[in-house]
Image (cartoon, rainbow, N blue to C red; front, side, top):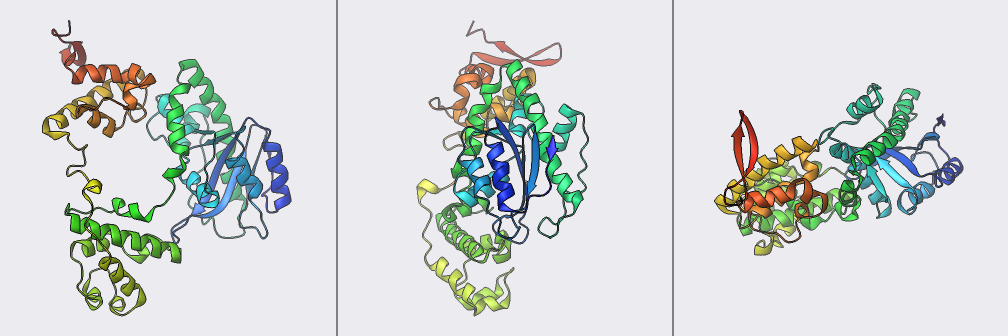
Length: 391
């Protein structure tokens, strides 16, 4: 495989992308920093196939990333291969408003091959390629220039190994007949809605004990305000206000701006500065959270009830058994919310009652819920058995 020197000019990038645009697939990775910013700061992009690979410096003077972004987002003929690509896709979405497609994520594929639910990249490389990776440059400052050769070699190594991993994993998926299992998961990962940062939904990321509509309404208003403040200043949310402080203000709102000086986590300056005034405006605009937006009290599906919760727990046990038997990660087969919906009586639209999930798990799950299947102990081991009623 040809390894190119670090690409720092637009012309070299254009020629690389023209060659890669005829490839069946490209392996992609990024290096970024986000400790001190709201938006991820893209510092390096690595891309390659089975013939060549390169690292691209997006911070190089005059660098035009348009050919690269077009290849990733607008070229439907080339498969884009990532490992645990959620953050990479977020960066691409922020730059383009779109996401790479078609898409293949080796971490998700590893679940279908029984290699674990969130297998790390180095473990996957060692397992399938027999190679140990040097991760010494992983936590370096990718934003500092110039980059040294060790950083560049480390970064390119990620895509060169990824380009070798992908064909091996694809062949294993074909042999096991599990390639089609991944389509829904890849579509979900590539859905641009996953990366659209809606301030109106920011409150859902904040932990708070109260379930009062008035408190949650204030939480929604203040969380949206913090999101917009952080965006405008390009600062991490916690630099504007920590989650604990935000929840405290939602639960015990200050009556005046002067009272902000007594809120734990805020400096005395908040009682007179502009940001404090904007916070008070956000509190004044808050309305009780509508019933349609209220979260379930026990974080389970509405209408599940105590008996349904016990059934959901039995379904989770069945899921563990079936996942072990088929050597597939349980997370790929079913999510907790799917099990809770089934236990609560829902049948229509559940992914576990469709396609391969139904064959691997859903049929037995439905039989368990409806009394045709039961747990039993045989020779000291947990097993499933058909009920006398079903027989």
